[in-house]
Length: 119
Image (cartoon, rainbow, N blue to C red; front, top):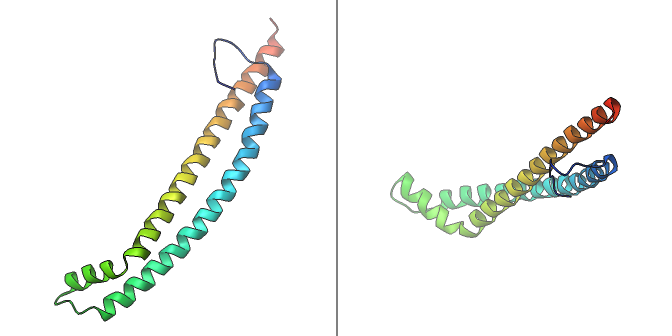
């Protein structure tokens, strides 16, 4: 349902959309939980690999050792960053759905007021 203030809504249309978004929020929330789990695992893997690489690095100073370690952990770093991206995207989707639900709740409240006040 597209929200068009000028065309008006029937109460059941708003209720149907609220139910649909509520169901969708459950799905997205599960995606957020899974993405958070994956991001945590990727962060742990990256940090452990980085620590090992720094310890075994032969760089002349701390900055060079860190750079060499990062190159040695490229795959873990990419996985860590991508997992973070997936998590941020899922969280944004959840926020978007929550915002849409609030808008629909406002429409529902306005429809109730209109129905109580008569034509």
